[in-house]
Length: 190
Image 1: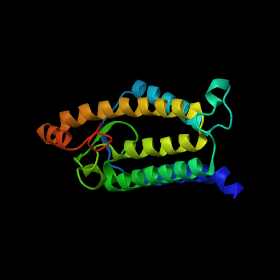
Image 2: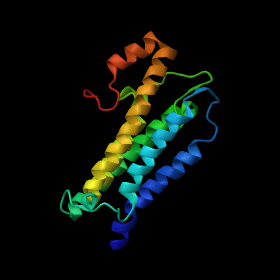
Image 3: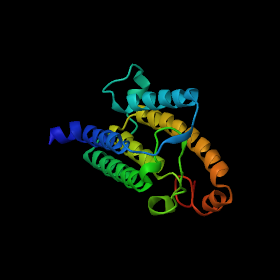
Image 4: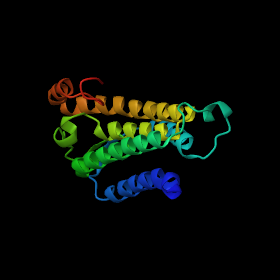
């Protein structure tokens, strides 16, 4: 059972990375791509947040203080939230198909996808990632998990805002109507 506690989250996140790499083949060509500086800032935030969640130790003692007491229950609740979040990401990525990209882009013959998970939230990959990160932080139970999630949330929020602007430029009234009907990240809230 110790094996499960040590490697379950690593396995889930590695499966996510492998799936993402495999699915990145064959996407449509881009006609517009965000600036390199924008991508760099986001990458720094994501790497920093991920390091806080992944590394066994961090050099700032306060960040390793317990936020919640470690327990079997918090581990399994965190694992379930992580698995559900990653599953939502997988569904959204598959549904998006050849329109996906890792950076903010417009694709050739870009389509406005509003079905499947995109009928629930406008940015379901980010929603799934945030839930998966929250689950991972819960299982870790330390303050650094909160900071890690906050850093990655900031990166995703910045990316979301840019995507929203580009989608409004590309799809005009259709995107406005969609955004009035469907929340960005959490149904009925955000």
